[in-house]
Length: 138
Image: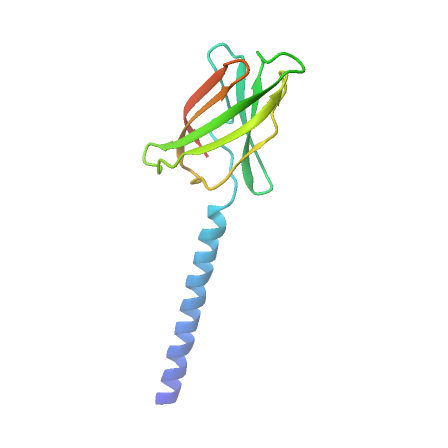
């Protein structure tokens, strides 16, 4: 009788352990899954700069368009995001090149809290153009 009881306890413990492991894996997998941002894009006050968001390959990315940048000219733009409204205020800073009034290469947004709220500002050195929005929700 004691042997049967011990086997039942071991089996129950194993099933409980597997369930806890599965739950942890689902939560971990969900933490890295890309989702749409809100908003999906924003402009500056005169609509001459746009920041757009997209997703693919399990990541979120941003692109920058500076309509003030002359055709053929290349400038460098900085993307800066920092957590607000209860999201940890860890800064995220990336630089990308923008050639003419065309979209930049995608800026991959990594290590940010999905569902977190961020104050985002983008500035370009060539034209001095900038855009900002808060909160952007990843």
